[in-house]
Image (cartoon, rainbow, N blue to C red; front, side, top):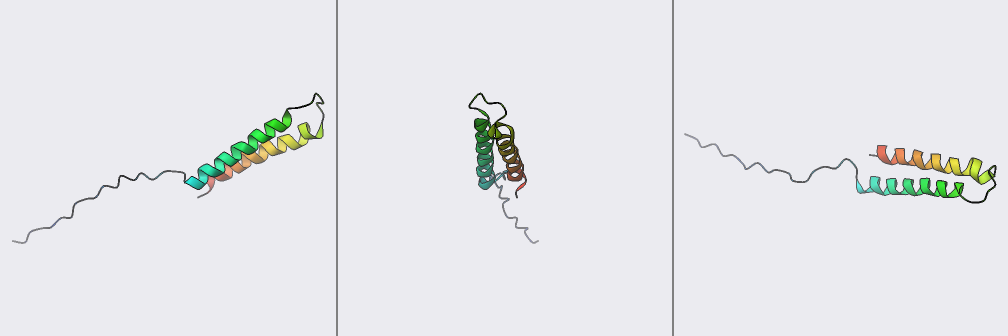
Amino acid sequence: MTEKKTSPISKDNHSDLVFTKKNYQLLIISMAIVVLGFILMMGTTDIYDFRKTLLAPLVVLAGFAFGIYAILKK
């Protein structure tokens, strides 16, 4: 009779993460952009300033868009 040789099954203990290191770096950058936008909204008492009404909201939206890109990047 022939003996059946079986190779030991190697279990891969390395769990595949959903995000890579680059994804986490991009997410941190996007959070910093959002925080920068909120910091731009603070400041003087002038409510209808260009910085508060247009620039800061655009920076916040750009930060969120960059965060979505960071999540979807493969």
